[in-house]
Amino acid sequence: MNIRSFQILVPILAAIFILWQLWKIYRFKAKWKAIWPGILVAFFISIIALFPDVTTNWLAKTLDFKSNVNAIIFVLIGFLFGAVIILYDLYKRQQKIITKLTIELSLLMADKDDVDS
Image (cartoon, rainbow, N blue to C red; front, side):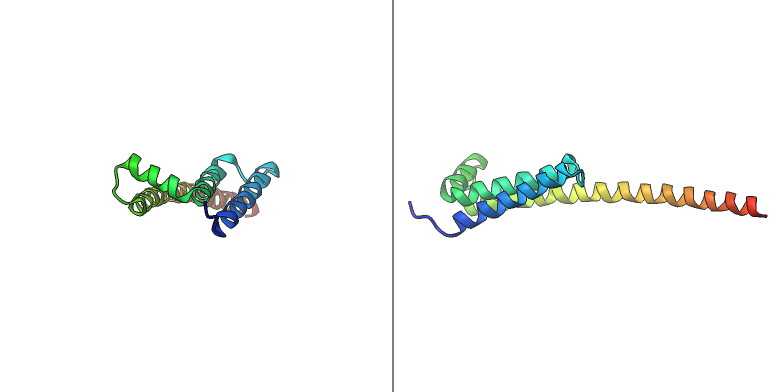
């Protein structure tokens, strides 16, 4: 088996990324709900980098593709589609929170103006 440089470099970078994400959870700077997709992607990328032929051929057989490259592209497009849906949901939630805070702030400012006059 011929080991290529990316088979060493990518898992090391993925391990650093995963440890960094876990450190953020430990320091209460992030929640597990926000971190787990990135950790999962880093783990799968490192598995694909460690065993590229075995993993991609298994993925192609499982998804019934003729080419392992097409299977990887299909899975990545599906992952990106899911990420867009999650980001859209986060955007809508942030819009609601900002609207609620703006209304509360304007009511507080109106109360303050009534008290001053």
